[in-house]
Image (cartoon, rainbow, N blue to C red; front, side):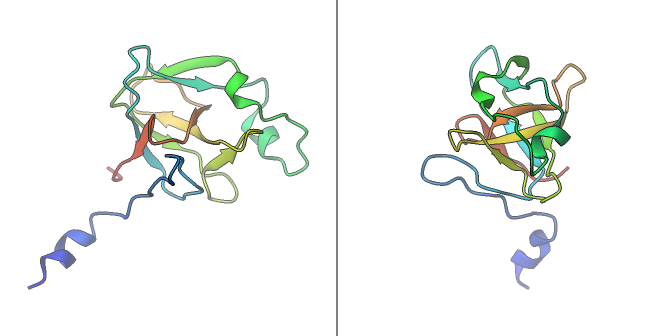
Length: 129
């Protein structure tokens, strides 16, 4: 018997980052913080709703790196990202850096509805629970 087939239905293939460590567009929802900063991984949000940001005609300037920090996710914390209408999970800022929109985080106190950098220095994909 091939053992591969027994395990394969419970595991999904996880997205891989590019050479810069950035994750590209992905339909994978489940992620974990790997950032070792004791203050946690900054989660940022501007004064707009995700709907306004995603509107194809949007005039929102995606300077996400300079948006206010609204919370921090701790190392080891799991979170789910919002995939959006396109189902592709990543939003590029004006510097063309990819960000994930955190839809919900595991812990009650964890931030949600804010952006974290989609980079392997900060986050990694995990298997769905």
